[in-house]
Length: 628
Image 1 (cartoon, rainbow, N blue to C red):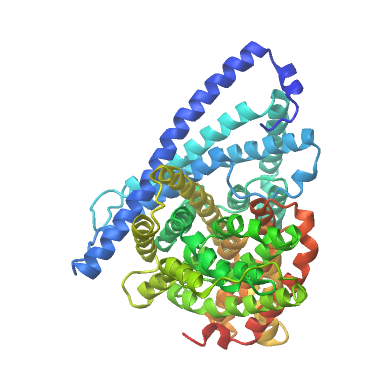
Image 2: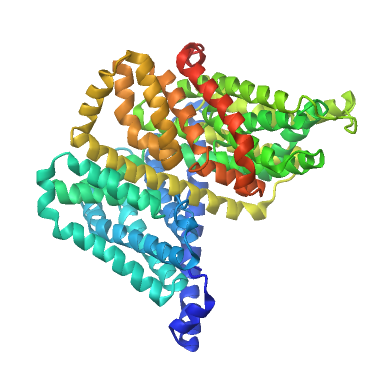
C-alpha cells in the first residue's frame, strides 16, 4: 500500500464501497496478472528450446536451422515487453529511492503515487506512436519465415497497453483518493507546462539537451520514478518539443535497443543463476571453499571472495550472486565472531570486484551497444577481477591478522577430498561456458542454453535437488528482471539516438579528444565519470546511454576498446556498490539482513583497495588485453 495511514484511507470513502472496489480490483489484477506471467514464463522456456535446438542442429547434426534466430528474435521482443509488464505489476522496475525514502510517510506516499502517474503519462504518450510503428512494420516480410514483421512489432503496443493497465490498477488500489488527486494533478501540471511552452524549445538549440536529458531525467530519477520511464520521458520531451522527429521513430529506436539478438542472453543467464541456487551447485561450491580455507585467519572472508568470483562466472547477475552466497556463508561467519557490518561490506565489495567476470550482463550489454566482441570481453574480464580480488584479500589479511582460531577445527584431507568431488560439477560449469564460446560450439547468445542444460542435468543426476515446483516462479522472476533491464536499454537507446542526432556526440568527441594529457587524461576522466554514473544510473543504463558516445572516442585516441571496457565496467562497479547512492550496496544489505549504517565504515577500506586496483587496470592495458 502506498498510504501508510489506514485511518486516512478509511476516511477517504465509505467502507462498503471501498471493500467492494478493492475486491474487484484484486480479482481483475490477479486474473490479468496470471495470464501475463504464464505467457512470459512460457516464452522463456520456448526461447531456451529454440536456441538450444539451433546449437544442436548446427554443431551436432550439421544442418543449421535457418529460421531459429529469426523466430527467437520475434519471441524475444514479446518476452521483453511482457517481462516489463510483470515488473510493473510487481513494482520491480529499477528506481532510486534514496531521496523519497527520507521523506515522511504521508509525503512519500504522494511521491509513490506520482511515480505511477508519471509512468501512466509516459505510456499514454507512446501508445499511439507504438501502434503506428507496428502498423508500418506490417509491410515488411521476414526473410526466413516469410511472415509479416507485425507479428513481432505488435509486442510494443500490446506491452504498452498492459503496462498502462497495471499502473492504473495499482494507482486505484494502493493510493488514497487524496494521493491520487495530488499525484495526477502534479504530473498533469508539469506536462501542461512543457506543452504550453513548446514554441520556445526549437530556438534553444543544444540547451534542450540540458533541459530534457539532464533536468527532466534527473528530476524524475530523484523523484523515485522508474529509471526506464525517466529516460523515456526525457527522450519523448526532447524529440516531441524541440525537434520535428515523428514519435514512431523513437519507438523504433526503443525496438532496436531492446531486440538486439545478443541481449537474448540476459534472460537466459538470469534463469541460469536461479538454477544454480536451486540445484545446490552454489552450496557445493561454498562447502568446498569453506573446507579449504576455513581454518586460516579470515578464511571464510577469502571463501566469500572466491565464491563470488566463481558464482559470478555462472549467473551473470550480481543480485543472484549475492543471494546465492550470503545465506550460506553469513551464519557460519557470525558464529566465528565476524561483525555483520564487516560481512555486508565485503559482500558489496566482492559484488563490485566481480563485475567483469563473464558472463556479466554489463559485458554483454557493452558488446551489444558498441560492437565489441563478446568473446574478447569474456576473456579479458577474468584477470582484472582477479587483481581486484587480490586487493580485497590483502585488506582481509590485515584486518584478521590477529584472529583467534583455537576453537576452529581444520577440515581433514579425507573430508576435503569428498567436498572437492561434490563441488567438481559446479566448479566445471564456468569452464564449460567459456570453452563453448571459444571453441565455436555456441555463440555468446546461445551458450547460456548449454549452461542451463548442464545445470538441469547436474541438478537432477548429481545433486538431486531439482525442485520442479520452483520452476514456474523462477521463470516469472526471470521474465520480470529481464523486462526491467531491457526496457531501460530500450528507452536509453532512444535517448542516446537523440543525443547523436543533436550533434552532441561530435562535440563531446572533440572535447574529449582535446583534453590535455591524451590517453591517460581520457582514461582518468572516464574513470571518475563512470563511478558517478554507476552510482546514479547503475551499470546497464549508463553503458547504453554513454557507451556509443565514448567508445568511438577511445578508439580515436588509441585506447583499445576491450581495455576501455574493463575500465568502464570496474568504475561503474565502484559507483554501484558505494554508498550513499550505490544501489548495489543497499541490495547487499537487504540480502545480508544488515542495516546499511553498519557496513559503511568497514566498506571504506575495501573500496579503497578496489579503486587502487581499477587505477592499475587503467594504467596497464596488458591486464585486459594480454590474453586476447
